[in-house]
Image (cartoon, rainbow, N blue to C red; front, side, top):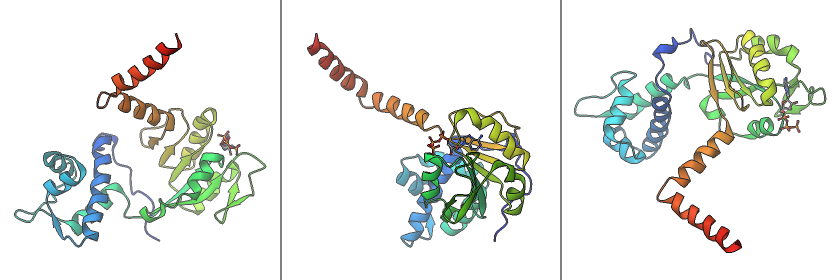
Length: 237
Ligand code: ATP
């Protein structure tokens, strides 16, 4: 198995902005697609065109992490892929704990898209006695008392939290006390944790609100939807 622990966490102030990291993930997928088509080298212009991002932005994002281009050649795709995988930390295995085997937790467990990026759910936890001992995907659900032992035994450093909002902070504190370095938090509740612990929040309602806002504000959507609403409303009066 590949090394799964960070040697030492990056100092927070050196972290790239969230938007840059998000675009680097897009570049990675696009480079994989270009390579699958047999392409060997690529320019920032080609990456940008494929993704609807301007080439200066692509160069600026990549320059945040180092010098990858070659004069007269552009980027060598294999070389850039290796570098971006290392930068994003997907050049290693990430055994993860999933905590909260409710509807969302069980749905995530069924999702097959994590594994090929090195993210493997390796342990399950729940505090519901009716769920403890159940098996999902060949994994047994542990009580939270087992956190220290299982996390250490399986070399787990990431946790996915799919517990209710009111339990999230307590569970986060427990996993951090066991040495967890990063949390993907699906609970609609901000977590208060030491800055050395990486937290990414996935609040699906917030994402939907963002989507609604975008739809309403794109291509005259506000006036279109607004007038539809008014027309229906008017006809009732
Ligand atoms: P279900 O009906 O199966 O409980 P749900 O999606 O409605 O599903 P939630 O109330 O959202 O369940 O809780 C998600 C999961 O988190 C549940 O399996 C619950 O037992 C678990 N859970 C709640 N509190 C904790 C806690 N403190 N520690 C660990 N797991 C918890």
